[in-house]
Length: 500
Ligand code: GLU
Image (tube, rainbow, N blue to C red):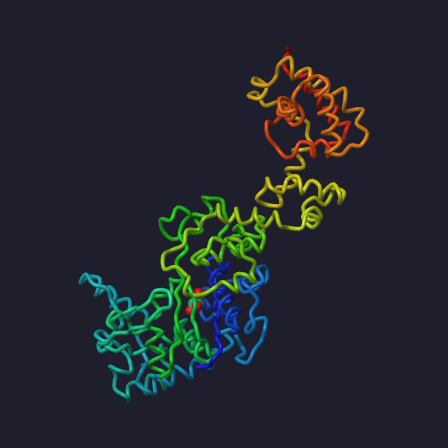
């Protein structure tokens, strides 16, 4: 076993990478960075039937967006090239043959019709068929047939698969870093296919062979692979190799916490479960992506890191470097992690506030002059969750109010406040420097002369300006509207407000 930690993210390009897969990649990446190890990206594309064009590029783009960069593998190169399993096809055959030679695996010639018939027979008897130590003797394989028959079948190029000869009796035990001891009896495992009749390895064989060859020290992957782990341990034993350590990550649960998170939940809830937008190449259907929804990469990373891990302190905001410093497999929870979209939004709001206002203005308010755009960003930044809301905010801000908040009018519109608004209307034209501070002074002075407290009038003044009882900083808003527009709004309000 090499000394330094080597971990891998090994997605299959069968569609868009699910956000749970991104979390798996992130945890692998964090561990590698934390321990000075190597993070490898391997593409597991041996299942040709499930191959989806564009899926590999999508995986690469998603990881690049978040800065989860592989040290080795696809896109980075390395000593064990190629890192795409379909390009390693020939090699797996040699390993399967090795197991045949050592008696740990065998040829099976059963056709799919024969296996279907077997399945039906079992079903009719009320049980489920498994290709295993009990049934293999009655099926057509190199364990049940004579050597001559087998040689003949092979010589005739009869299609076959190679199956693992799972021992009839025995217990498989391994200690998962997250789930602790796992015990499984071999009788619950069937003689899994290792090589398919098309000459391609199955996921199980390719995965174990590659993890061994690539000197992987820790297999960190989703909990859905936990049922495969005992089989993988058997394979390591069959080859006589040391198994890596396993860490199976908790499931992602629905926002309410009841059951596994699905794409359906996302569609119903209107939130993304994919890092980037994805267009299905067959149906053209679009799935939402975190990026396109307006999540910042820093916020997405921080949110994902907390889906199943916690630092053990109160701190919630972590930069990537801070995550690397704080991360450990020991602090990953066993229990499923609720996919709390509200929390993702909260993270986004926090990171938006730290974001460069100039850059946000340039990207999201491109048609507005730079200085003014930046001022808008500052005005609205703590009122938005996603940066693309800025445009809408500015749009609404620029429109004259179509109606006025009834509740505020009922409670605040009276002879005194009417007089106050008229005083403001008279005073503002004399305000020479149209800056928030001076405007405020101008207003407070004119009210003071009449003995009216500013606090009594301001909410009503806001309604007169914007129609709404609450909103962003009023004095800065006045500055941004400009004197003419403020006066016009005030005139309109005095005209529209009920007669006193
Ligand atoms: N190819 C598997 C997947 O798509 C990898 C599972 C593993 O990490 O072993 O998730």
